[in-house]
Length: 153
Image 1 (spheres, rainbow, N blue to C red):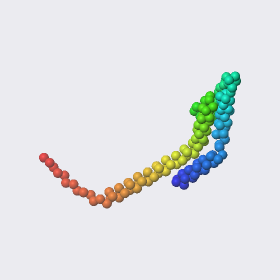
Image 2 (tube, rainbow, N blue to C red):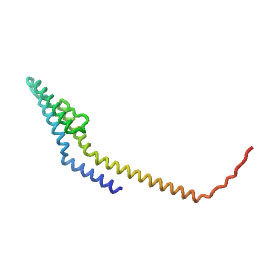
Image 3 (cartoon, rainbow, N blue to C red):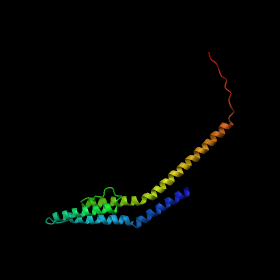
Image 4 (tube, rainbow, N blue to C red):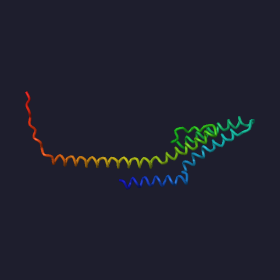
């Protein structure tokens, strides 16, 4: 059991290391969708006085379209509404990437948790059985006491 738990932990650590160097396809897809909205928001915020209104409306449409695409692509994101500002969208991109990575890691982490719980339960049962055996041995070696019954009137 401990070998299986150690192997599961080692596999997760290796995957984490690999994911640091090579991002997952799911994370890249989520980032790509949000980047389109980020770029539209950035253009609208940096636009001149005459074109700012038109670009803001276009950015709002782009954000709505990309949010809908994100809902279909990444259903594990509870809040798939991309913010309408560049700073908000950039912060949302980081948060969505983290949530996506957690979503991918979840089955591996659940396996480790399940193995840890099972191992802890086995250890508890083993300690309980040892303690019970010691108590039974101690009870067998005790000499029975004879109690006098005292009658009080």
